[in-house]
Length: 590
Image (cartoon, rainbow, N blue to C red; front, side, top):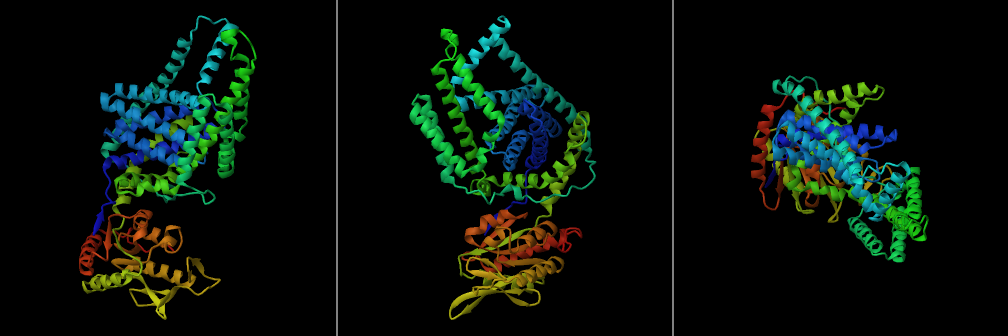
């Protein structure tokens, strides 16, 4: 048997779930607000808010590793953004968190460390912007900016302001914003630390589902191979253009752009914005007029025009390429790396954070209030929600049921094994409920399955190979809608009357949101009784992570015995009965 204690979660991850979900809520609410109003320096403003929030939580909880974990959670939650390009914001958020974490680890949990970390975090948005522009347009952009600066200085007569002083001034503004955010966060953390120490929270937060964690757009076609190919092509285009191989470089760029537009229609979003084409024209004509102005004093040269067009071809290729890469990063296969055991804490934290997101977005949304009210209502209420949310997460983990997954190869006898275990449990005086799926064989060929209730022996055909236009088709089988309804009724009854609930089987139908999926979601949310699932080997990992469950025990029928399995389930069942509360053990909602 393999036992995964997925129900337990270190306190720092639980706290990071709270901080990360609140940070992500502000990224969504304020980010949309600022982008819709076309307000400049949106990244710096969001970074300022992020510093405020993270420093407040760091001072409130004073634990190492909180900020980088919260930043990682917030960055991964950014993947649900409808934006075509998510990679840049995700990197930016996590970089800010790492800089604050590094400062706190190096200098301690004090105001000086917070100020330095906050200043570096907000400054990182400027550095990231500069790096992004150079990646998009190349180092030729630096020469154009230098020419623009000298031209502006000559026209305004401000020769005494050197380029170094101008850069220093801009840098100081960003650092000052970070320092301000850190000080405000420090004050906010101090104000709320008493509430946390006294544990005087009240109220209940209703968690939603975490479907956003592994959701994917059915209209998108994902491919790990195309992810690698896109990155390789982008690198090749940069290499060709950097070595001034213009004809092959621009040809490759145009071909790649065409490919991205066809395969990833969402990559066109940024190209449809007027602001992009205004920038396109500005860079083209700036290069044409100023490329040789500094060195030769000549306005408008063909070399400058060609350079401008080359820069824009590179930029369009990079923008569409990054949009394509961002799309492929939403691939459920990429995200399913979190299924691996080594990432279980991150997976659980993300699951909790996503489940709280609908509530937080609604509770913190300042729509309809003035600017002062936005600050007062949203930022202060965020921390008043924090303790309630933390305790809600604790209770959510405590009430998750233990799950025993009976697995084996196809036709190896999983249902027979589960039936024997159920019989042994009944001999121990444990009430079993739910159902098993027994095979229907005709002429030594499997033609369907019967759904058999464990509580009263009721039986009905759940699926058959015989075509039925009123049935739900999945693979070679047609599923009886009436049997599915009866199965849900059996599970409702089991939730109310049984000590252990059997479900045979859980497969691709449930993992795609059909079959017993809705009943499973309700069971895992509202009942702490141990459950026994029958799952084929290839789907065990996905099934163990798909629903909100606690400890997972994987029982391989080729290695484990029915008696050992029954003894283990019995021990967990008695523990569950002792801790069960009336609210949690209620029947499934209709």
